[in-house]
Image 1 (cartoon, rainbow, N blue to C red):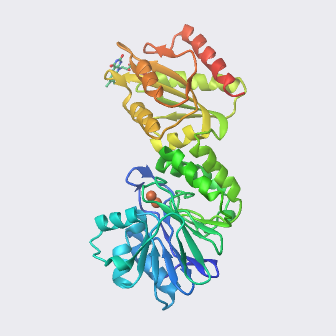
Image 2: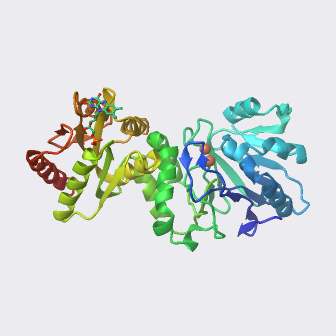
Length: 401
Ligand SMILES: Cc1cc2nc3c(=O)[nH]c(=O)nc-3n(C[C@H](O)[C@H](O)[C@H](O)COP(=O)(O)O)c2cc1C
Ligand SMILES: [Fe+2]
Ligand SMILES: [Fe+2]
């Protein structure tokens, strides 16, 4: 049965949620599910903005058919070619064979790679930066947003109602729970962490490209943002845009400390816990500890984007860095993390190399400062090393001012 929601008199949300999928992109755990948003704008011409993941096949077509209410589907705007939004295009064209596809040249090429559609060229309306499409009362403008996830991404701006259809930008992990507007929930309390995890892991690497999009968007009068995942924004836009501003410039949101340890027998963990306790005793309240083998890296990446100071503590493993820490550090480098203060602790019983190797990896992060001293454990903490931990805590304290 259809389940649609009105956004304005002529704009309808026709998406849905998936709460069964374990891993988004087969990588990121989504314990609260995910929504795939699709929008139908009805005017003299009726326009569909993106489709959904194949998991929502039946719900999507029931929604579309209901929202169209017997009217023809004239245009399908493809803002993003990734299959979580395009999976239904082939079936869509079987049901609505005269609908015209509005996309850029790169999207057209990808569409032809993914699907054997064999559409005549006339069925594509190819658009470039700032091209417009008038559909009656509404005029839609197309703005390219390359690498705001994929290279072909564009966003669509409805000049009439001031709605920005932002593709993956401004999305959030998590299924929708009835409410589709961010102002209807306590977003900061209940959804910000997942919005950060979504952004940092999915597009965190492409900060400069997100900056380009934000600059273009700043010239538009935006009343409403309709992303492809999560909530529709119609209030408090500046607050959420400011988060994107910080994340895309690799600026910490707050002063805080995230300690991540990779420990086999518990001795490296012991040092990490004692350091955290010392920091707490110095009055610091914003401290989080993570076991790199227990917490999925996507959560730690998000945390690394949130705070300004990080501690990595790891045992040596087969002449290298403890495997899960090694993986996390590579992931952080891939995601382009910058501008952080970083302390390191390592451990080894016969040939400790994790410290040296961690520092070599971390040195690849732009504009990151090492916090001294580095601490090297030889199996277990000694009394004298408690003094080193005390010195490290003092140095970390300075990064909190
Ligand atoms: C599979 C494996 C490989 C290891 N490789 C090394 C190594 O190459 N060099 C080293 O000094 N210690 C190595 N170790 C030992 C640990 O790094 C060392 O015992 C360390 O003190 C453990 O710290 P933890 O108590 O935090 O687990 C290895 C341990 C395991 C289980
Ligand atoms: Fe995407
Ligand atoms: Fe997506």
